[in-house]
Every structure is written in C-alpha cells, then in structure tokens.
Amino acid sequence: MRWLSFLAGGAIAILVFPAPSLSYVAWFGLLPAMVLFTRAATTREAAWRGWWFGAGYIIAMLYWMAPEIGPGLVLVGGVAGCLYSPFAMSVRKLLKPRPELSWRRCALAFIVVPACWVIPEWARSYQGLGGPWDLYGASQWQHPAVLALAAVGGVWLVSVALIMANVGLFILLTAGWSRRVPFAAFGLVAFAVAAGAGPLAFALTPPFPAVRSATISLVQPGLLANPVAQADASETLTRSLTGPEALGGKKPDLIVWGESSIDADLTLPSSRPLLKQIETLAAETGAEILVSQDATPPGKGHEKWAVLVGPTGIKGIYVKTRLVPFGEYIPFRQALGWLTFVSRAAGSNMTPGTGAHLLPAVSRSGQPLPIGVLICFESAFPDMSRVDADLGAQVIVYQSSTVTFQGTWGPDQHGSLAALRAAETGRPVVQAALTGDSVAFDARGRELAWMGQSAHGVITVQLGLPSGSARTFYDQYGDYVMWACVAISALAGLVMLARRKGFLGGTAGAADGDAAEYEADTGQPVAS
Image 1 (spheres, rainbow, N blue to C red):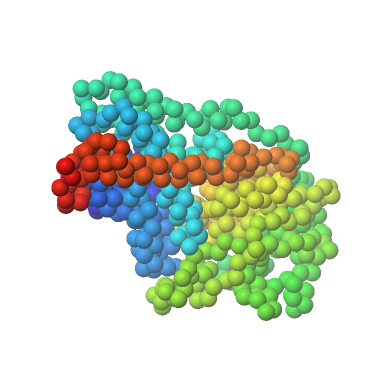
Image 2 (cartoon, rainbow, N blue to C red):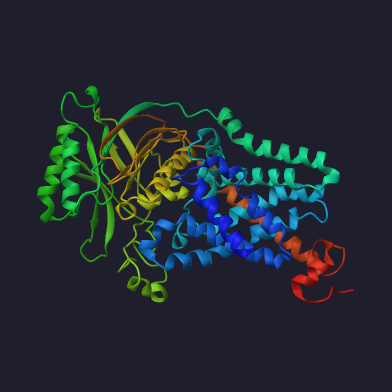
C-alpha cells in the first residue's frame, strides 16, 4: 500500500502540471490517495503512507532535475516527503468511516484537511528544499477565473479550494449507505462552494484600471553553441526592431533579453566595447534594454545580475537573491558536497543579492516605467513579486535561462508561474528566456503570448499598466491564508493529542474514542 501511495503522489504531479497540464484532474486527483489513507489500519500507518505519497509527488514534479543533482533528487523527495504525513493523518482521522461518517467530522474535514495540505507546501517553499515549485494551486494557471482567488489569498488559497473540492467529492462518494442522501448533499454542496469560489472572486474583484499602456519586446535567441553566439543572436534580433516597418510601426518601450544573455561584466573597462554596442542598440530602437550577465565583482563571489542599459549607459542593476539549490549552490555543502562527484551540482556557491527592488526604466515617451525585475527561479516565490508590487512596480519582469533542462517539462512549468504572479499582484508579468519559454500575461493572469522551447525570435506585447499604488487584497495582507492554516493544523494536532491522553473526555488514551486503534498504534492496552 505504501508503494501505491508513492504512485498516487507521482501520478497527480505528472498529470496536473505542464506539459500534460490536465488541470481539471486537480479537482479530484487526490481521491485515490485519500482512499489509501483512510484504509490504513492505524494512524501510524497513515503517516507512513503520507510520507511515501509526498516522496512520489516531489520526485515526480522535479524529475527533470535528475541530471543536475542525480541521487540528490531521491534524497530531497525522501526527506521532504515526510511533510505530507500530517495531511494523510488528518484524512484518516476525519474521513475514515467508523462505520459511517459523522456530521462533525465532515465539517471539520472541510477545514482541517486543506490546512494540513498547505503546511507541507509552505514548509517545502524554503529554497533549500526546492522552493515553492509546483504548489497544487499552480495547476490552475490556465484559468483566470480560478486564479482570481490568488488575488485574494495568493496561490495558497487556490490550493485550499482544490483540496476542499477533493474532500467534498470524497464525502459524496464514500458516505455510509444508510445516510447516503444527506451526506451526498453535503459533499455536493462542499464541492460546489470550493469550485465556485474562484469565479465568484473573479466577478467581484474587477481588475485595476489601466492608467496607461507600455509595449515590451521579449528576445529569445534559441539554443546556440555558446554564450557569444547567444549574445550575437540577441543583438541581431533586437536590431530587427529598428526598421520603420518593424512591429507595424509600433515601437517597444522596453526590450528584455534572457538570463545570462551576455558573458561579460559590463561594469569593467574591458567590457566597454560590448556596453557601447548595447547603448547604440538602445539609441537605435529608442528603448532601454534589460540584459543579464554572470559577474564576479572584484573582492566578491560569483553573482548573477540583471542590468538595465540605456543610450547613455547602465541605469540600474539587480542581483539575483534566491539561488537555485544544487544548480547555483549546494545547501549544507559540508554534508552534501559529495553530490558534485556524482552529478552536475554546483561546484561552488554563488553569492546572493540583498533582495528585490525596482529598476528605474523610462518609456520611449519619457514617462517613468518602474519595473520589478527578478531572475529565473525567483518567479516561484510569491513574496518577491509582492515586494516589487509594494514598492510601486507597474510590471513584473523575469529573465530566465533553462538551457540545462531543454526538452523537459521544466521550462513549461517555469513559464506557467508567471500567470500566478500576475494574478496575485494585479500586474502584468513577462518572462524572457534564452531558449524558452518566453511568456506574457495580463494583470489577471490571462495569457497574451507564449514562445515555446522549439522557437526563437521576438515577441512583442502591449500591456495595460495599473497605478503603482494599486494593491490586491493579497498584496496588502500577505500570507494570512498560510498562517491561518498553520493555526488550524496546530489546534487540530493539540485536540488530537488531548483526546489521546483522555483530557477531553471519552476513553482515556483512545483517539476518537477508538480503543482498538489506540492499541494498534501504540501496542499498549487502553488505560481503564
């Protein structure tokens, strides 16, 4: 049964995220695992099954990292998988027929089970465990009506709605036959509430009015032999924007190149000729150019920079803050440094920046265009784009390079995250990638453009920009959903412990009054 739990976790991760992106499966895809949890003979066994489920889920969603970290992928999945044990335990405690469900347990399950799911999502959001990659709510990136919940409570609230829907369907399908009709009605209503919450939020929260528009061009040179060829291709594609016939006469306000698009440090005198070329391009196109470089400043470690270049030189620099575990640094290197001998894990740790901040771009008409610039992996972190929104960004810009994972599902999953960040912040989001995927979404998370891994060229989008002071509910109140789930889970755990110890009445030492279960769990007789 533990292997079945492992497969149930892996299957749902494979199905609901890009490339398959069968997002509708997320509304019921946890049912097989929930059945396995409720059929566990003991709570302890349910915890083990939850662990195996979590390991399967994490390993499957990060399969494309295997060439980089080798056996480290199994290690990450095996360690982080234990975070899903409380979810499995809550499912068994509240949804196991004994011999039938009760109204009290059904009502509690509708609240507690989703909270226990969010806990592992929150815990594994630590960047050393892979970051908030493929959170369950991210499966709905193609559905702006569902993503409206993200503007209210972030991706966490979308995850909560999906788990609530699974709980409602589980009650609908598994309630005891003697009380089928009322329980079926409860399950159906619970599912309808969860499924209808997003469209209701979409209808009640109109988008911020656009105070003006901006045109942004994203340059994707494609898979080339070396960094010099990529930089040359980016220059050639950018120069195609200078002719009077380019873009039907519509000129960009900002041009974005992908991550690591140049292989020189523009701040050094030796790179002055390259900087002069980019300045000339900016003057010819009439638009500032956001490039990206790997840099090792004198006296410092290796860093990754986004550099905004105008006709007169460098206007601003952002240093990547959240680094890719194993790819750009190895967490706990003293203990895990051996991975460099069996995989392509980072040979040395890069140096992180000091945090998110805006770059002062200016449109071709001379108007300020405050942009929140983040690099690659940082698109997975909701808090970073929130910081940029709070600072007054009118558009969020990501630069990405996923050359290492070309041909896998990784770049597609990465591109989809921009939809989440757009819905959460109420701002349009664009991503320029060296080899794909380059994408653009409007302020409600609706797809405007998508250039996949097999393509190269320039995509240009016109974006409606909200006021820099506009704030979604999530911008203002942050991760309150996550903290509410922590409080609910902690309270549920304390109640379960108190019942086990006999402090809340019933048979002393018996969880939920089930003496046989207590004896099976502990191997000790129930206290009389």
